Image (cartoon, rainbow, N blue to C red):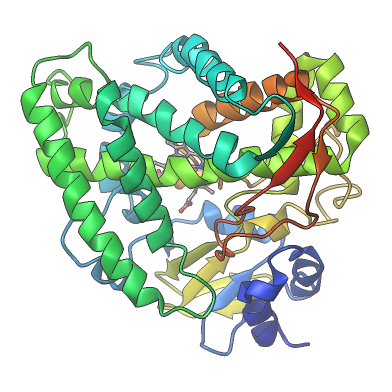
Length: 403
Ligand code: HEM
């Protein structure tokens, strides 16, 4: 089968439960031209090279217009040097060197949130791991991080739902309908965040949003109000569904391998390695669509012409046998888990430390407390998106919830 029809097949909903054999076919041509003139990159070394190549741009007018053209792009859609200024300012309130303890300090709160979610499971019976566990957790965490008051969390959660739906149209549905609805949600959310900052002005202890607004010492800062609002929406979108999918993919992967479930229960200290291997084996962000070539780029035996759209198939690179031994085996003990699950280069995932900690806590506590868990559907029903891939529901039966 030619590369062009393959990419279409990968995006087809029928391939969602197991796209990996299609990625293996795609890798036969590391950089393949599609019938619409775009290029798909599918092998590890070529992906890594292009993710670090300054001739690849992340700006794209079409997508901004699809979102209603109402806001300037967030830093995921910018190139250096603007990208680095905004990302650097946001990072000052999120991680090292300026805020090295921010994520670690949230650990206790995260553990308490997970405990409450598990305590609310019915005593013996069935749950949907997505709706009852994976889904409510990251949005609660991001609200605490940003400084959204507790009483506003349900509202925030509704917006998060709507934004996720806007990038995840049902199979067969016209995506532009959802995108328009998404644009309306962004407007509401932007107004809310703006009001929150107005009312909390000066509350530099209250959360990342307030600290960012008050960060007058930073070089090139602080972020303008519009940059701040757009960044907050980016953090919500980029950090929500991806983390939901990492946790749900993790539960599915472990329940398919009861020995691994049992091992994590006995040896919770392996959680960091296990989560890294999950990010390689079942990455929630499978494809970065719509990067662009700013010049002719020779790679993988072809020339990508200037102006072409480039799709980075990260999930395929993660299974490249030229880079990983036995790539289709789930093996947390592998010595070389340098995956592409968080991308690489200047846009590599901003929230990676947070996502890692969330998944480690969620999975460790779940395996400890569910007695005799069983998958009720395998494969489970998937969300429609091939790009942010994960189960829509994950029904699981168990005997009881342990204390
Ligand atoms: C398992 C969870 C996650 C996965 C798999 C994931 C994956 C990714 C990937 C692949 C990229 C690169 C995109 C590109 O190159 O265009 C990225 C960027 C980004 N992620 Fe994540 N992400 C996760 C969680 C989070 C969280 C929790 C946050 C926020 C708190 C977050 C915020 C961001 C931001 C802001 C960017 C853009 C970085 C930039 O352009 O410089 N992500 N993420």
